[in-house]
Image (cartoon, rainbow, N blue to C red; front, side, top):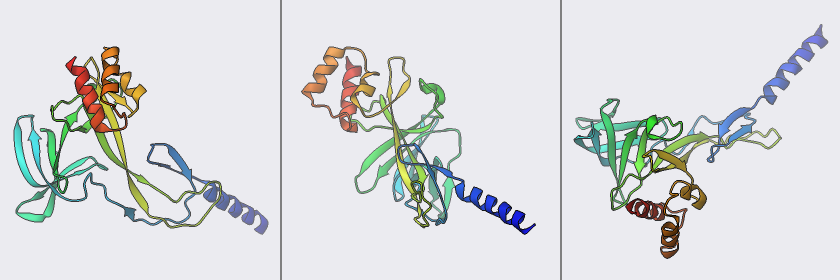
Length: 233
């Protein structure tokens, strides 16, 4: 009887240690890993910026509400403000009339505008939500991005079981979109081929503009110049 019990226990323990957990790395790929010991703490924070900022809530695209303490939780997709009568009280804006908001980033003094979009604003399946309009002086909305944070577990081993206790950490994930000729947003990568598949008209003029302005397809500022030029033709 004892040998049978021992075999059963060995089978259970071997199954436990052979099980893997799935986590996403910063590229969105699945990483299989053995987790033997792990800290419950998460390194970093789930906000788009590290501190509370001045900002503005936009209701029904027409009502503007200035806020002295506004923050965007990109991990849980929540817009938060502080109660001006009680700074310890944090309020989540869940009103469906919230159609956008702006954040004035401290230090850099840059204004970031976010707009709520639905899945039917895209040419492929997308969950919708809040998207940042990539800053440009022309105030166009041809080029947008979705800011997210995912929880990454660095406690992974490559084929061997190693006891470690590195904390979980937040990692940023940014997804870009360009509006096409049908007025729908298309997911793109910051690469020449991906972007020109969307900006596919007036190829000679576009090519000349790229060469003349030495467009770097990895820089947001250069892409928005190209996109605005494209839609000015």
